[in-house]
Length: 254
Length: 298
Ligand SMILES: Nc1ncnc2c1ncn2[C@@H]1O[C@H](COP(=O)(O)OP(=O)(O)OP(=O)(O)O)[C@@H](O)[C@H]1O
Ligand SMILES: [Mg+2]
Picture 1: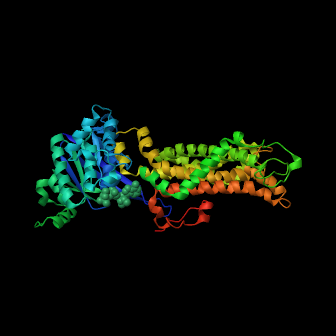
Picture 2: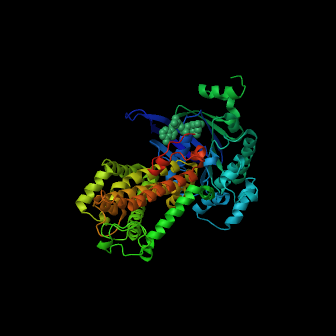
Picture 3: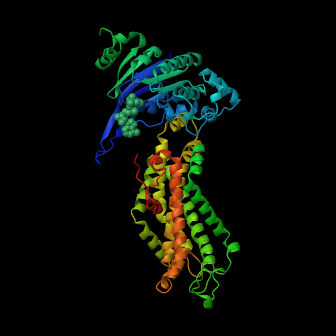
């Protein structure tokens, strides 16, 4: 399969806050290399603070890398995003802050549709999207604070798939939901991926969720991808960090 | 926003203060129709009269009707202050949003200029500018705007930066929404409340400022009526007729206090959490009168 996304030697550092005026920088990403094939689902695992969200923000073009390249189908990320409006999307972990509190459900879902230009039969499109993510019509004119966590995250997913994207970044999209809702949302995400042929980058800090959904799992540790495994061959991890992580979740004899 | 209006309406002080200000502004605008006398017409024979049915607030040292002068003075004081506030807030919002939205070089340039402006004490800067440009109402407005805009850019930039860190703006950017859309729908709508608080509290400060400059003889020139200048004229006869200070002094005091209360009430209605413990007992009347920021304690 062709590569949708190719990242080479990506580096990113942030200014350390509160350490006098020395201006010392902390390197969060230190030479990240990865590829994501079109149509696949890639999981990105790493402990809290390892820079997963930072990597996601760089991929989405929200921040500039210090060094290295991010190429979508051979084109620099910024250019690709400009040429392919609405073809990339994102779902965040913190659903409460993901929707403007002054937007109704309909307004939130309509926003990316307007942004990508094509506005024909908006009402029906939104109805279809609501059905697709398993939401009732009566919530259409509600505000975010009038929805449950699971409902709101479904709204976020509906909004993310509204423009038929080819690539979605899911930054811990299920981590702050409770367990029963997590599995429902996972199933929903899996179904949507198959139906709409979307490529996922699934960021998570716990392995269990990812191992079901993803074809390939990347381990981010100390600013680098230290291990890359196909989902069937988790037991074959060579890197110590990846093995420790695996051992803590799955009772293999490793 | 619906919650905001509901809380605002249930706040008696907020409603009272809004009504009072609305009344004062209406009186100021309609001064030419309502004033019983010409505010500059002198009548030396009737000077220093006490309040009566013919002269509600009495007459001053030149026999002019104080009530008419208060009405016309309010026109100058309040309208000039509101105009000054609008100009500063517009400059502050435009530059603050630019700095907070684009960051990088734009931000650096704007903020360094602000740093330079803020390194002068604002009162001294205003006096210096009036000294260069000369006295007069246009010049004190100009001086106040020059002295204050940088502070507003700072405040509004920090409000904008908070919003820029929210996921819904990240989503809008990834979805390819235009800068104009994000600024209008997310930033301005979100920040409007906090900007309104800044604006009302600031109007109070500017009224004091402009009155003070007129009191010093740098602003409005006689015989035009203006509250600060009326206070200045009353000062000259303070020992013989102290009652002359009452009308302009109370007018400034009440309007400034009302704007400060209004600013606080808007803030409370916007962030009900701040005020949970204070609902029955206002934190401190004095703090509010002088526009001092309250310390939030849960
Ligand atoms: N804008 C920023 N400025 C300074 N430091 C930052 C910034 N953004 C992130 N960091 C730092 O970078 C590190 C990585 O943060 P990041 O959010 O990418 O971690 P993460 O892997 O997503 O963690 P989590 O699993 O908790 O979400 C953290 O130490 C964080 O403090
Ligand atoms: Mg994160």
